[in-house]
Length: 56
Image (cartoon, rainbow, N blue to C red; front, side, top):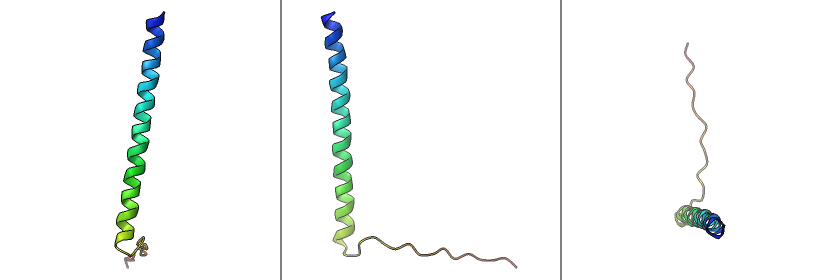
């Protein structure tokens, strides 16, 4: 009985650790993307409209 409870808690803690590590790396990578665009001084690039050729 106690070994089952220990195994369940180990699984819960392991999944929590993986979720925390995933969130940490996601936040770190989004911070890098924000710094990279701001370091150039341009901010976000505006999308240009697509030119469509009409066939005749």
